[in-house]
Image 1 (cartoon, helix red, strand yellow):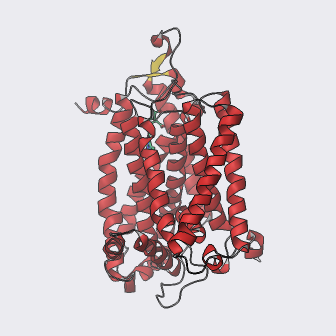
Image 2 (cartoon, protein in one colour):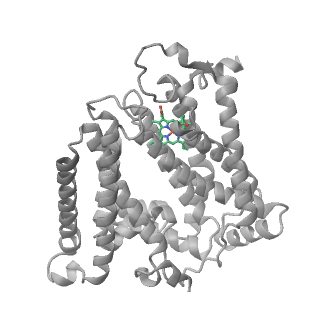
Image 3 (tube, protein in one colour):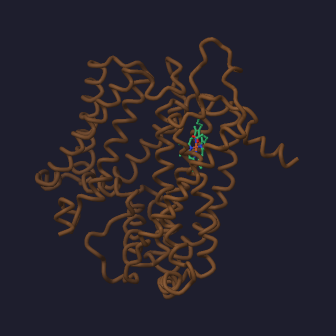
Length: 426
Ligand code: HEM
């Protein structure tokens, strides 16, 4: 009985081509290992952590300084959580760039997007728990952004904060979400995710031309299992080494009266904070994320012209057009970041015009124009088919986002002015 339940998730035989490391890089499996580590270490931390503003920071110091292996367990939790974001994002990219989101895997792509949101929410809610300056102000900034969502913004903000300001109710809500709501959602979605992989007949691979699938079949145990165990052990070793060498940060206890300069969002939200520096918050917090989300949600339902599943970057032309999109996005975003630092705001240049127009619609129009030029050049130079076009647009959007994120993390200093990292260090 037990065995048959497991076989719902794991097949007896697998396609040997799926075992090639370069096919998946073991990223989905790594994400799962990290989820297990996080659940286990989180459970241990819960024995000592106290979710009250006057006690939270002290309980973290107690775990760090007085509990046997407390600092080590906390470090493992911290490193695994950060790795989980990176690994989940890389897995998302691997799925995209091998066209593994095409039907019949569309539903699983959407479940995956749900998992990505859960992983980000896990990290964000956990970020507040140490109740130090860094976490308090990061959460103040991020929940402050919610205000710009039309109609429901204020309500959403007071729901997440549990009041007008970040305080005791916020900590309590974040703790409940981090330790009950999100684990529950994860426990429901993950088996569903794996079952869908199984239902689609395993991971996406290219069609076999001669039609003899059987000759590629190998036993899952030991061939797949061995690879999974080795990947998991290497990952665990890496996490343990990092946790021995580098401690999870603990800042000074949160002081609601003293905001640090700069006040930055957690690193994975820095892309949005950077966009906020260039455009009206309504567009940065509402319109742009909604457009990106809709784009991601409709991806599996586009009618594709060729079967590129299991083939990295679709084709030779796909690779070239993706690289072109990456370079163009990189150059354009650097130009935006630098020029915006030195030219005055549109609202200063166009006094009397509502900010929503001067700082919102006008920059959006310029962005749309830049995108149109990119799309025109792409099609003129490479003549990509629909699969390659979708891929190029995806690369363009995500390259802009990643460039903004890196700028926010490493190139913004006091008052969010542009700096060079070595000047920051000095
Ligand atoms: C906690 C997060 C996640 C975990 C633990 C996870 C785990 C896995 C695993 C183990 C697989 C099997 C193949 C592989 O290793 O690549 C897989 C496949 C898949 N995942 Fe995820 N995943 C997560 C998040 C995501 C995200 C964010 C997406 C995309 C939005 C996604 C979409 C998919 C799809 C479409 C497949 C099928 C791929 C194929 O057939 O080649 N997953 N996932």
